[in-house]
Amino acid sequence: VVADAFANVTIRLLGSDGFLQLAKDAAARDLTMAATNSALSIPLAGVLPLDRIAGTHERIEFGRPAGRALVSLP
Image (tube, rainbow, N blue to C red; front, side):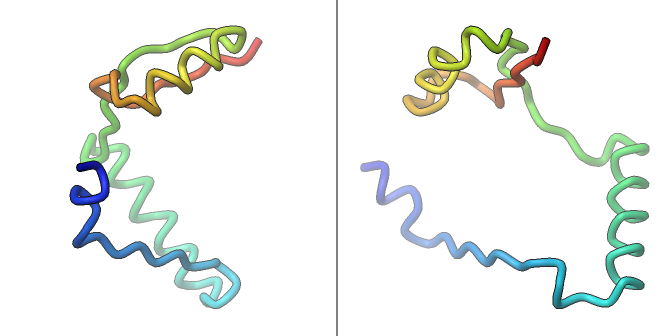
């Protein structure tokens, strides 16, 4: 059932080495502007301490949180 959810997904990973510095700078400006304007959002399920990372990983693995888990470092 889980595999069916990803049947039509394509993932392409790009390294930044193949891009001109001008393009990297433009991407950084665009992302910063989008974040500043609240156009980017990541729903958080919660903020958890580092000592609970194993349980956090299990929650994510089994799809329990309704968002991403943010782990705080001491």
